[in-house]
Length: 221
Image 1 (spheres, rainbow, N blue to C red):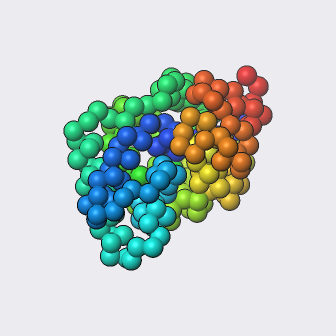
Image 2 (tube, one colour; image 1 turned 120 degrees about the vertical axis):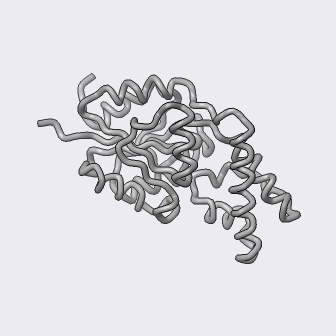
């Protein structure tokens, strides 16, 4: 009997292009505190929100950082309510549907989003039910701590050698390496291929993902 496989997806920068919402909410939050948004804000995508704010503003005291977190959440909620959903990357839906049709593959999510934020994305794109395990920032330490992927393995009963993380940031790759998973980096996200050195391989389009998964799992096409 073939052992089940597990493909775990990051969300922002991997499944959906949410950079407009993220940078807009960060800009609004920092402006509310009378601060300029630091350069390259997308470098913190994937971290839990408190850790992302701490990384962007390491010299701030706890009080101003907490206000930034609150302001970001409100700004993101407002942007989401008044704008179109962050779009799926080209080819994402077709590949998710292809993997969902396989009897030997389960799918999961490991994201720095909150549960509410993830539910909004899944509902907006009709993806509710595609993923058998969803790990979110509400319940785990921030990436690159491996807690999210370890929980996904425990929930599904899949062994690490039979699981793969698909993500766009160094945090995704470091998290999954620490847990012993295979690692597929995507070149279209927010860190860029040059920062995905811990990946087993980097793909340039969603169309390449099924073959990449088959290769790392030793499955004949």
